[in-house]
Image 1 (cartoon, rainbow, N blue to C red):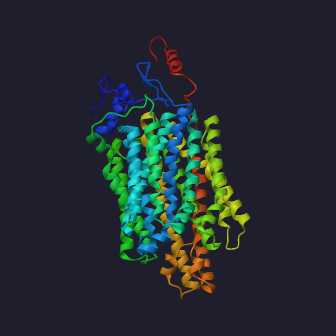
Image 2 (image 1 turned 30 degrees about the vertical axis):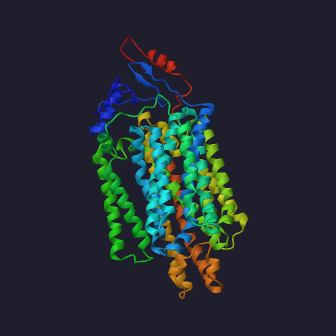
Image 3 (image 1 turned 90 degrees about the vertical axis):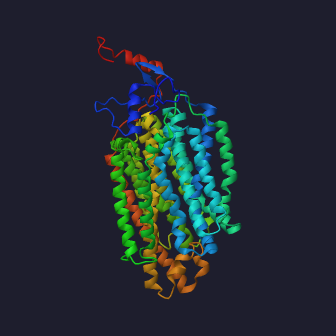
Length: 580
């Protein structure tokens, strides 16, 4: 162990209680059952024997603005890539003729992002925050180069996986940086603004991807990241300064490797790969009762159970520490996050498919028609963040947002082949506003109620929930869509090749098919999309129910009192020299 006081100015806290808790995480021992854990105020002030050491040094004004601009640009870079693949896939399949790999172009990013998020949370705790964040950007850019220069389909998948690995570090790191550099009172508004940036960029991704794919080449969907990424690196080097009261926990590299929980990482990664394979094979290239489909489903279940057993055995070293997850505020918000994001991701991916396949719109036109959704989700995020910043309550706004989101999803569910523009824009506006209000709140709540030294791990868990929702539910939605569409095609147009239908992009079906065949394909697409929207509606309604188990508590607000005031308040609690 290398967790000491004066010898190591890099310690996050100097109290003996903190040493005990940090030692428990690094060597696997459990904290003192008497409850003598570290107490770390949310404003970052570290207490030692009734005195304050290293008072908070939060960024404000222009300094805070430059840091937020830098990390928001990083978010834009990553979130564009999440959605950009949707319109790049037809171009990639034209080049490599690997229809069976189509699902992996999107899934590889989500799978790596989901599994690597907690690992990044641990690294941000034990390694310098600035250099860890820069390394995440570097990995993302390497993945972009691999995908852009890919000579075959496998290289594209590897590049997308590397992008997912780096993206999870960037997204989680951005939220950690917000928590570290900004005053606590500003966190809800800044996280709400971050969610607005994330939403707008993610949904604009397909529009930009469509423009590159149709006007230049799909490879520019990845090459464009290099100049933007270079700018981000320069901005980070110039402007990112972590406050002095935030210090990395000192540990040897061996100790850090032990806390990364590599066994847990491998189990959850392989389990997600198995699930993705089963869903991509089942009903499409292989029958659901095929041996390999059944085997991968069984492996997914066994490995998932093995992951939770491993996490329990790992104790404080776990990538998802039970000491954090067992808190009601954490697990209830984590569940809400997974389910609400499921509805969001499904609409995000399939509403453009609805526009392009059913209404024959181009990628650019469908992007224009989804702008109301973007605008209202951004407004909802900012309004929600501002209101929470003033009231310090989170649960009521999660409930309100989930109700509005469900109402909007119900309208989206009613969309049909002949629905008017007013109908689908009205539906997406309501849904977008509800999403904006509630989807950024779980991160705000979990960070706000976490001890300072647990913020990075808690953030990793929540980013994992966000991306895990994409990894699970985008794959499930794709399987549901493809299977239902193929069933409809076999019924209405048995003469059509299922491979041709599956391999044709949503924006291309009006060019590839005509007459009765086109009518049959559009009808089949509507059947598949309708079932995805049904699933999304169920997720939105379930999210409403989940808000009822989220604690109704006020976020701690330590930003209104100075460190001196806090010390004086403690002194007043001394009674006959016996109580502090």
